[in-house]
View 1: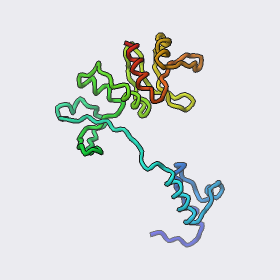
View 2 (view 1 turned 90 degrees about the vertical axis):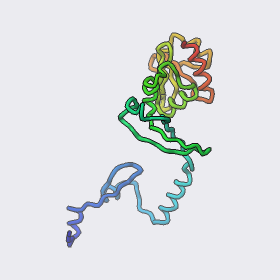
View 3 (view 1 turned 135 degrees about the vertical axis):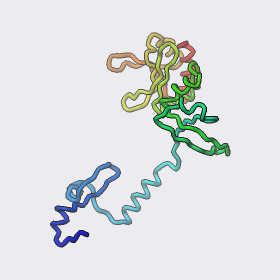
Amino acid sequence: MINISTPWLILAHLPRNFSLSQIETRVTVEQLELSTWRQVSADAFIAAWSTEVDGLPKFTTDYLHLVTGILLPIWKILPQHSSRVFRLQTSDGQKILGRVVNAVDIQSVAEQLGLKNKLLSPAELVTLVLNEGYSQQLPGGVTLRRSYIAGEPRIELVDALPLAARLVAKGCFTEIIQWRKRVFIPATEKAASILAAAIKILG
C-alpha cells in the first residue's frame, strides 16, 4: 500500500505518463503541456474520433496463402519458422483448412513439391509483387520484384536491359535512375498482360 501525503511525492516517485498511440510514444505531463496537443472535452473527442472512424474504409483486403489437402506427409518440407493453420469459409460456402505459407516462401515450397519449373500466373505474380513484396526469378536470369521509386511502388525487371527494346515494344518502359537505366512494367490494369508478354520474350 502506498500512502501519498504531499504532491511532490507524485512528481518524484509516480510520474504520470500518457500513451499517444498515433505517434507511438510516451510523454510526461510537462512535455504534453509544452507540446501542441491540447485538452478537449469528452464530446469534442468523441466527435473527432467518430469523424476519423467514419472516414476509414469499411473493408480492407488482405492476402493469405495456404497449402491445403493432406498435409501430414509434406509437413516437414514446409517452412518451419511459421506453422499457423487456418480454417476458413469462402463467400460461396467452401470450407478450407490449410497451412499458412508466407509470400517469400512460395517459390521454395513449390520447388519442394516438384513444381520447380512452373510459374504462378502473371496476374498472381503482379498481385504478390505489388502487395507483398514478392520476388520471382524469371527465365533468362531476370528477376521480377517490387521497387520503390520516389515513394511509389513499381514492378521492376532486374537484369533485363539487354532485351529492353523488345520489352518496351510490349508495354514496358525504361527510366534512368542515378545514371543507370532500369526496366519497369507499368503498375496498371494492363500489368498482367504485359508481364505475360515479357515472360515469352525472356524465354
